[in-house]
Image (cartoon, rainbow, N blue to C red; front, side):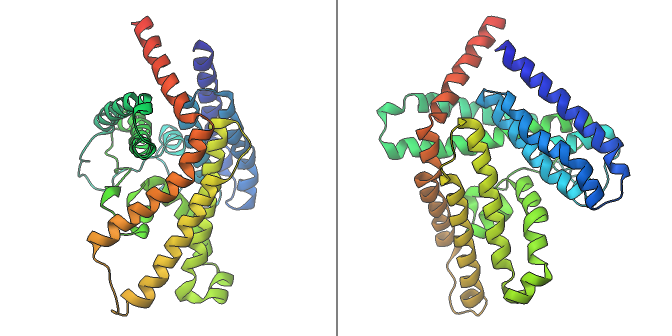
Length: 337
């Protein structure tokens, strides 16, 4: 355990030093390819150093934070994204904004829950779900999959809430919520674009979707009306590849690409949904009530995730490793207490 904590500390020091370089040196270079080349060693390092961590509870959040920090650095190379517009007020603001997934509220309205309260609630839910998951031999397979879905939902919210705590405490600002009631989604577009993991959606929209959607070649080939289709599909493909890297980091096994195919299929389904909306809904020929379209969208995600994403988790024993590490952390906490 102490060795893993030392690895985590070393990772934090390297990441902080790299971001100091980005702030004091790379930022002084003109935007464009020159700045991108100066950031390339940092981007490469951020993909490598998480492999020094071997526990899922440390390695998974570290890899996610640094992987999406790379998306922010790519935008920063061209004076775009959260690191440039508006520019951070100081170096602390820059490091926190680059290293963690959060967004500062522009108005003075407070969030429904602070990150600390959100983390406490999600930690309680995760603990309860892990306890039930540990006894999954009593359940049939469908019940285990259901537990896995709820665990994933609360675990991601827990990690994002914990990642937002430093910004909330050190910057003394109110933060935008990370999720927007995804279970109330009315369609696949609504789920992926406006409700699920909003900070990641914003990064993918800025780095992949918008450049492709506004590319003159794409518009010339597909037309302005349908240029959305390749942009959406490529965005999901990139998201799938990033998630495949996350699974590789957790399993350290040769990728089998199920999770990538999950996101490719979701991209295809969203494109089909866009076509149907433009052909039928906009013309007033047909419209599903949200009470029907919402459950259908969630069922689509649940079935495809259960057939693809969950298979990799079970095959590599990632779910059991989470439980074992969780119990180990509990024992370690009791010893230190």
